[in-house]
Amino acid sequence: MRGARHGLLVCVAATFLATVCACASPTGKRGDEGSTAATEEQKRPSFSADSAYSYVEAQVAFGPRVPGSEEHAQCRDFLAEHFRHHGAEVTVQEGEARLYDGREMKLYNIIASYNKEAVRRVMLCAHWDSRPYADSDPDEANHKRPIDGANDGASGVGVLMELGRAFSTQQPGVGVDIILFDLEDWGIPEFYEGNYKEDTWCLGSQYWGRNTHVTPYRPMYGVLLDMVGAPGAQFCKEGVSMHFAPDIVDKVWRTAADLGFGQTFRDQRGGMVTDDHLYVNTLAKIPCIDIIQYNPMSENGFGDYWHTLGDNMNNIDRNTLHAVGETLLELIYNE
Image (cartoon, rainbow, N blue to C red):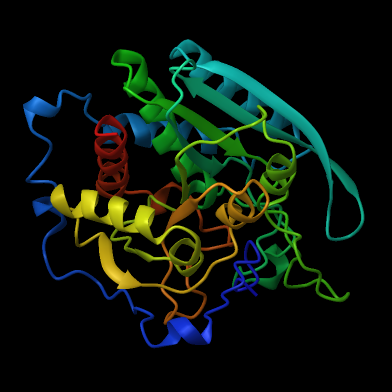
């Protein structure tokens, strides 16, 4: 399950059931959100939703970024060069992981560090690979075809690319490490006939959690972005995040509300999701939360296009990218 996703093991634990949200569609107009944007006194750069959208589009233009493919290699070099161009110290961490079917696969985690000398640091992360299987596609003939991963993967990376550009125009007071995890989305597929195996998703973050890029690595906290670009997306307070770092969840959601994005960042509990933040918490012991579109009352939790050939640019909306990006800029520049 996660459906099966990331395993997106939609484990909604009993202790959370009483407070799980349906994340119903907002009644207010999205255009009204953000009307109480940050004041000039805070002196931080603004977030360009057009720029973030173009970064998502650029990733999708490579084609599916399936590990081991030429498209994956080209996108890796593109992402590393983007952050270098915008003033980051970039490390590409190479490793290997074992897939659900026993094969070994090389992985590349991309780390871009800003204000490298700062002791107080924040970690921002997303996964940059795309799923090799459209195993939730309504047409069974598509189940072994790779997906574009516009929302599931590229949206979070696009937001972080725009944040990197913003950091290069005005350095934040804290250090920021942007980490793009590889091999997140090659978890066990729906059509697999063998026994279900644990921990087949999020292989890049599992590798990084056991081999952090610097030792010791102790940021104040981490924020993971996953599926943060869909039209009308809503983000509930995800269960694993609330278990490990409820204070960080509340801080981020309060920041969003103060900016007028309360219809997007819902002040409600959501289900528990197996995602990269789980391994950042359990292996690296860093409090990390997940901003993820997830409605536990829907059929699969993630939208009809999730893990289908329909996860394309039609599912990316500038308003959603704007709400997420502005919230993170406000968070970082007020640390």
